[in-house]
Length: 210
Image: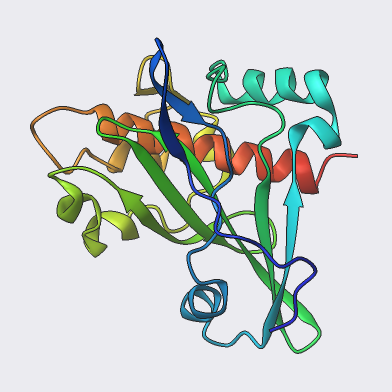
């Protein structure tokens, strides 16, 4: 496979620090097996290029504030720092660029959620899955019927979602049709929507903003 960078597996980790309990380590969300995963998401692909991008390098504090504004929420000061490397996989069929794969780490009820998106060239969702979810309800979140509800969702749709309230502001948005797959609580469901919105917003800021 064609690559620009050879990545180590970047996952969100936690560790015990003396006197401070559990701390989150801010690292990016790479694919577990890029060769396998990109081919599974884009069966017609013949290769990919991998990029690592940080907010710090692309624009620093001004970019961070712009992303927060579009997200509608503030970054977590520990695990959403500006120096987190975000991997992007640019998918090719021959010489033709046909799509993107990229993910984000989001704090959930029982730990990190690793949310992976496959999109078209403009960021419309073609496929979504949890690479990691630590929850007794993981099977329900990973149910294909639930995941398929995100197909076709765009950044404009996510702009209607308020991560602070967990509400969709526009009743005509397709996001209103995506319901929490469990009855116990909505912590991981809200975390999923926030993480996906952040993922899409960062994608646009990194690749379409000059």
